[in-house]
Image (cartoon, rainbow, N blue to C red; front, side, top):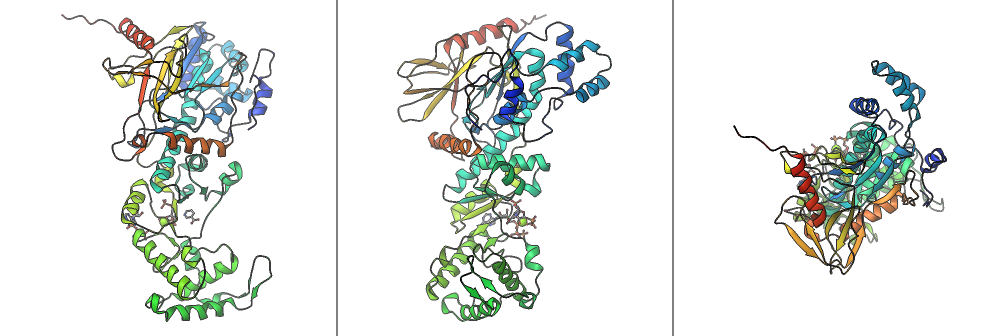
Length: 542
Ligand SMILES: Nc1ncnc2c1ncn2[C@@H]1O[C@H](COP(=O)(O)OP(=O)(O)OP(=O)(O)O)[C@@H](O)[C@H]1O
Ligand SMILES: O=P(O)(O)OC[C@H]1O[C@H](OP(=O)(O)OP(=O)(O)O)[C@H](O)[C@@H]1O
Ligand SMILES: O=C(O)c1cccnc1
Ligand SMILES: [Mg+2]
């Protein structure tokens, strides 16, 4: 996506061209009808009350980090921007809405027919950033009825995206930088959209490649894969191979009878002392499948070796630590005894219900796996079903609003806010702080009081070495703010990896990670509590 500094939309109607520049959401189902019915009910009631154009500010945020961790990776922003760029009801949509809202006045549908997001402003934290609870990931400002309609699709586009990106980042963290991570989840994902999103966001979170061909086509994600048990078991014997000619890629080297060569080598390794008879009971049909696969992919050979008995290169069952070590020993012995340089470094891929815990267990045991193929646990986010992002009204017509709850964690933080990340001496982020829009920004070298939004005793002075403003303008509406760039997937992925590297290690460790501090300015703290007391009814004791 090209960078642009032009306003996305302005009063003289450049909204359509902005939409063309930004492009359409990946999923064609992400249209203006993809929302909950109650959003239309409220839009109608706002309209009836003459409030539909009231200027509202909503924050999209989550309350708790997923997977028992203390960090989250923010993802899905580009799809939200594409969504609002294309937000418009078609005549068919209007006809349908009229049919399901028969009691609404006709003029309301005339209003719906006209609306788009040209008067909506979207500020957000850059996609791929590490984020924390309570801090707005996206701040949406605009006519209340329009922004209300955006609640469900925005939350939908962010929730799973951020959850699965975080899951992928956690798998990357436990596997370590040097391992190849392959996303194999297409068959186990929640439908086609779940699968496509998983492939995109697992790559963003640090995976190297996917088996999902459509995702490769749509997003340019590298494709990787091996072969399945069906291929191996489809062969009966070496007689199943009609064309035995093996050619090098450029055709310069030809072996006319590769099958005889395979047999010859099998005899050699069967009697090799260093392999102590490991190949004595080689399954002939499995051997035929591998020989045939090698003939098809002479420079890219990979064998699924556990169909009959595990002994070598994608391992998909059994004790993966033990088998990978045994396989490596065999490869190293062959390299040494038969002088085949590089054979010992043959890539060992492992798959089969892998997840953070099993990879951690393998690491603790010691293993020789180079690449992990991960499906079910990764893409279904097995250990946490949803992130639980919410979209809350924080201000209307410049009047701050608060949502109270018995559960303090569910009390919303009112006001249109600006958010900053304060970095310490060692270069690590120390704390995120939210301030009222009217307050001066925190500055490097200047002491600022950071307060826990709800717990009075929790506060700290911080003298930041560096201050980063978190919310950037991605959709300026009718303002003249320059629009922040929507970077390529590759760039977002790099951002994610860099951000995780910059985080203090105790925030990302798997066991008992330290919570990152999220705070508000003293002014905002006072205001929250003033508004809270103002809004909370005083009980009466009888
Ligand atoms: N060394 C290991 N340490 C911890 N977990 C492992 C280890 N090796 C494999 N696993 C995990 O143990 C589980 C093995 O599951 P299970 O016993 O059902 O499979 P299997 O019998 O080996 O294979 P299959 O039933 O697919 O033929 C998988 O989740 C796998 O990832
Ligand atoms: O295990 P996952 O993390 O979900 O990774 C994807 C799995 O998909 C394939 O299994 P397949 O559909 O062949 O079924 P099976 O291995 O369960 O027999 C492959 O063998 C992997 O095990
Ligand atoms: O290419 C593979 O090995 C693969 C792809 C999808 C699922 N399981 C394995
Ligand atoms: Mg399997």
